[in-house]
Image 1: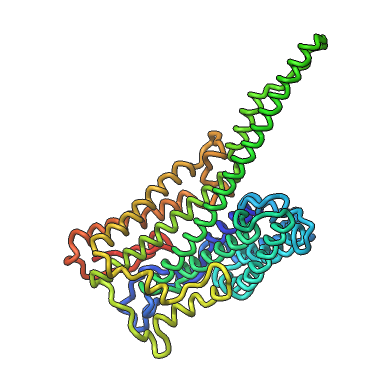
Image 2: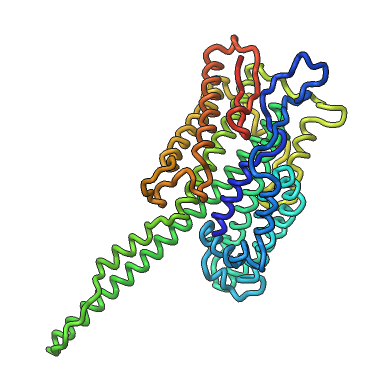
Length: 463
């Protein structure tokens, strides 16, 4: 399915980092030249993972003979993905309205293919490709999706207040997914070298993750309500059949006609089967829920890091960003330039530097409460990761129910045990330093920014 292909390509892309990643490399004092990380605190780390030849072969075989991977009808795959991810009804995909139905799926094909194509690039090129081609395409798609939803409501006489915007939801979910990945790649390749740069990145990423979690949560709620309604209708129909059969049986007994016994359906068994089908979780449902859980992990980490940085600022351990970082720029200008590509998208609405200043201002919060709040985020994140480690098990020869657990080498899962353990290290390290800050802030004289545990989430070491 399309969702599984996306996860495979994202996992492959994550293995080949490529470029500058924030690390803690000490300068060579004997070298009279500038240190390898200059004034940014970054060291250039050679990529280890998928090389350019492998990426080229993946891209070459991604689409040929007018089919995805040479064998799948791409518009049909998109339709199935819309049903799986956003509970889009079959009637919308088969609509005969102009611009709807199959023609809408065909229109989605090129932008969705570009998102897969971008995952075959190295991460520097992926960012450029996303800004140049994918964001403008999705901005246009969001406008078109609004028209598709309106046509669907008119065709079936549905109320706009009570009917979900199915096409728009799917496009917005894909848009936010690409935006969130765009910010994450920026952190990985070292575009946010200082703590105030990282604070803006984690703050914006927290917003994107929250929006994605809320949309997918509301979609899942709507899916469950629809299943419950379909189950209720099915049970009511069975009760009507049961009553009709009882009336027919009484009429036959009154007439005294003897006929051969006709085997009646077991309505209780039918009822149990209907309930079981409504509660059934498929293998892909499990993969989607695992991905949803990973989103909550990343949100806790982003939120906790922003509050940890705010607590260090309150304690006076981090110097304020200079009013003019260079002769030609400022902290506000850097923020605006870094997220300028989001401005072309109708949804979600782009955030301004004023929004960041207001959203990251914890001056009215006591430092003890802020430290506790940041610690709660990291502890909650660690608890979610522990649950993930219970369902993503190490490689074993035993059979695993793929609707309840997955092996670590499964191609379709969105997180590996190794990454989960790395994220746990980030949570534990920051929690310990927060405890040190709460117990003896006067003994802390220096803060070191490190990315040794994970390349997307830093630890702020107190010395």
